[in-house]
Image 1 (cartoon, rainbow, N blue to C red):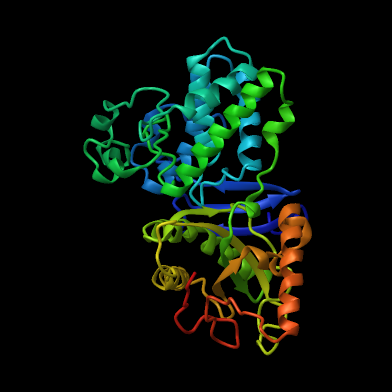
Image 2: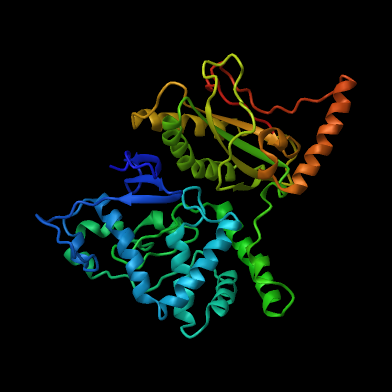
Length: 422
């Protein structure tokens, strides 16, 4: 039915996700369609989801699917003023998107997590107007001592007596060792209570807290009459922040394959970041949540895929100042390539032409990868200057080559180990 609707684009099923779903765009709006199988013969049209007993005898994936709606409903029940909450949440979500910290899949915060944070501020300041709630949001969370959890209401341990099968699903750092290592716990209010931010990496937490601190300074200037509200929602100058980047190029033969393959690549990026963070030469890994379309075809002209479908993500790398030699991240990068390929084969979605090509990119080389409208104006100017200098060197026959990865295979598939030195 959806496939036949002309308003539907980018339709695909994600069966092996944490919450199985159908993803699509309807009239340009991104939608996730979730499914659950209830333990009843009939489902009435006015079926209510608030009663926790509806989860009894359900499989784990159905519990997760139902909890998406249950958590949203419970948040609205727990805030003192729904109108002020929704207005404040819209502002915070816009700020988070523009600052590049809105994306659960790559290790930042998703919509539910931001909603819980805003709801907590509404609970603390029940009579405040939205503008004051925005100010309090940045004040409170700039001082928050993570990993102290954000909780809207107490965890209902009594429910575990009635549904012991869900005990392992409830967030509890006292009994579950893995929960003790969560960096930024934000707990969902509906049973079974879970951490909505288990994806958050060390770098992501640092980036989020830095952005909150910057926003607090701007909001204080706004309150003091020194700035306009538009200053709070300015888009981040991501490419101006770093000198070194790791480009992750997703390649597929068809648009249909690209939707499936690039989604899998994106879901594994946070694992690569977690591994890169452990490297002694790297201080910070900053993934930009949005993918880009490469400016030109990155594959060799002899490749059997003449017009590949490509997407590229950029990770900004902040290097450790104490490093004494070049940084080799071959192990981390090759592990990422192998993990994505293996996952695709296990899920039986791998087809000929699918590949992921990591490449080291200097700041001065970004212009070769991205369109001018995708780059910050300051980066464009620096790239033009760097290109002029390089052309002069090339004319003298002394142009240096800064390729850091050996990308093998005429077909554009990485068949040898990816090598990298920064």
